[in-house]
View 1: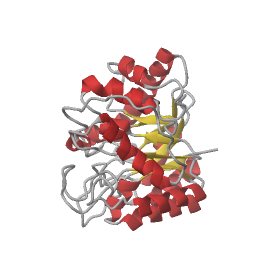
View 2 (view 1 turned 180 degrees about the vertical axis):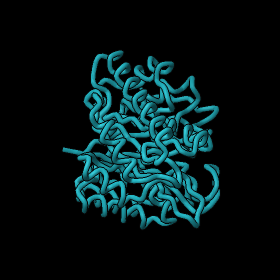
View 3 (view 1 turned 60 degrees about the vertical axis):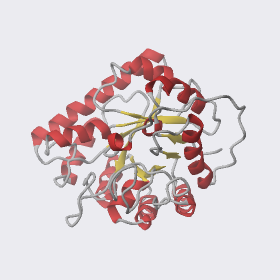
View 4 (view 1 turned 90 degrees about the vertical axis):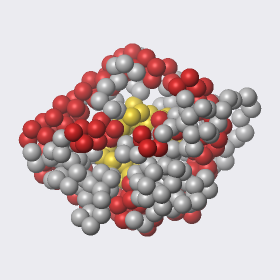
Length: 324
């Protein structure tokens, strides 16, 4: 049975008036198992729209806490589930509780389990401590997550000699914590590459998490050493694959070796999340995601019935998404 393949579609959103068409197009693709839902701090106002976007047959949606986590970290340097500051850790627990409550409300709205994974993070930047993170996870693991499984998404660790994008705990510390907590690690290719300034770091992280028996999944999101339309060098900006963005280190060879390594390491799902040029059509947005799916070697994509699709006036703004 093929592994589920998820899309971080929010990074490649078209103009608002075309979002419904975009999600219908994605829902038509038999290789798409679900989408990654961003959590900025609430779902209440967007719940109805979000629910309408989630195809009934998508059985592997995920939700990521990184947008709201970073918004809070920028306001309060002590905010995070791994914070040694008890007030900052308490604020992060409150945020995580709000995520749980909003997820429950969304599931109730649509009358079914919507999310297979909830991605949490080892913030804050520079200050994160494994013991604090362990205490937080021990608490949140006891909550009712509406059938979803908790995973920790590894972001770039804090490296003193370089400017961090996230600057959270090292993967080795996160692996130790999740091993004790009985949950898994979710990798983002680009965030690992940003950490080590190399495609090799992403592969090393896949192998390490797999060897330790905690690799749950990986999502392919690019990164590179040059300034592009998606932002400055080494931005966590969800660059497309090398095929669509020549400065991206995430080429077909790197995707293939990491996908194969992840599958061998026990990963339960793969995925793709990229920003796109602002004038890309809906079909072009889909094609950039499909390129990554093909490179993973999960199977061929059967041609779908063609239909006319409008071009977008603007696209998913990479600068807006760069830190989430």
